[in-house]
Image (cartoon, rainbow, N blue to C red; front, side, top):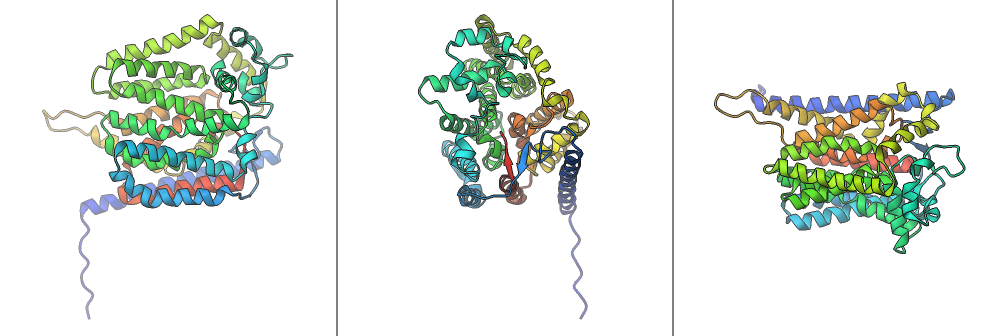
Length: 459
């Protein structure tokens, strides 16, 4: 009996197959990068090179373990991967955002509780290097702000602790304010980090929807819920930073000068949470460029908001530019002087992969292909379309990450430091083919679980 002749494959099927192979090739490159970063890091640590990261490229220690958060994390992951993804396509918008935020809170808390309530939450922000160490000493906020810059440099009797010295005073103000309203201590601070960090599941989709990409917002939301970076969102100050930046950008995207002004105020405060957030300007400009109307009015309103916050801090005695000048000097008074730039400039990218997840490379590849297709010349008089939000926002975030990496001011610990940019890189996941998204999302969840169960991460 002769075999039946095979049907010829369509050009569309061939292109889809090629694209799938391209995604797998990018995944292989990611795996090779991560393996190289781990192996070279282990070798350098054995030789006594000052990486100051026992589990390089992550700032963590190898410690396989499990906890009562383990079954909770598995339950959240399976719920999102199963009914959650189906429901996200059809749910009412407000209900979807509320459920996404609650699921992100549950995911972050479950991952933190793998280490236990005390080690995973309560004690995360209390070590001597952390912000809470300084809170009891702040008895006069105006005086603290006026003298903040003078205490940045190390080896002084009143030098700030590491994290406080490395950031503008806004970060310390957050925890001082929490203490003033009767919610002092590590537990309240950690829960605030979790609750605020999880708001990216609201802010990023709202931004996309406001910029005309409602379907992309629904597609990206599950990737924000099961973000591997949630390992560091629960709990570190960077969780608050991530939430504030995302909310500020979302307000720039929605209509109305009042919203743009509020967004500018939040982004101005973000500048006083981390010096690195001057790079958020690239994302802000991308959002404003993607707005459908009144871009210049929104730009002026946002600029007024940023200027108002900067002026307020200047009047209180803190000048951002003077603080940054001292921080650069303080940076090289510590571990940065030992950490080799030649390793971290590429190992940082491996750390980012563990924070943003393995979907990052394939998603960015798909976004790049989409951008190329949109810019392809069209017959006259059809207008050439520019890149949409699912291309331009990840591109702006990638530009910010590249600048931070090349600056040498981000040697190690970027798995948490770059979280405010990582959530916008994941917007590119909207370009993944719908049938493959569940598999990629499963890879994201497995990455978070592996990191959290094999390592003890340090915030």
